[in-house]
Length: 158
Image (cartoon, rainbow, N blue to C red; front, side, top):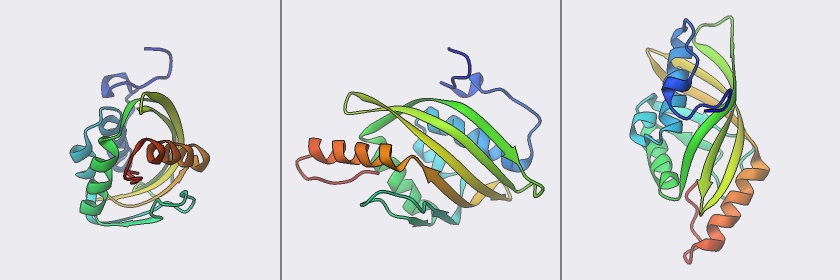
């Protein structure tokens, strides 16, 4: 493991966690370990996720855990995450809200990719109830283009 890389939860530096931080830690662990059902289970049944800068073909809003679960599972069929790094968590004056910056590294169609994120997460009763996610849209658009080019149906799994 290189300095700062997270390839499994045991590599993630543990600090005393607020409730939101504990959920983010579980979010990151499930993400880099490709545990899509576990990841979806971290979200409230009526969660709203906003992604204001998504590329064409990717929904800007996701409503509900089961819609999100479907998106995670579909994406997991075509890409695999391998690690996270550059993780910085900013706790706010509201212990239920945090801002996280991180890079996710993965593989899609035999090619490596990195996606940079900033996530504003709200946690209530141990579940993510709202998230506003900002991602590297140029990298996401390129991955979608690659996916569509390699798929005879031209479908999107992101």
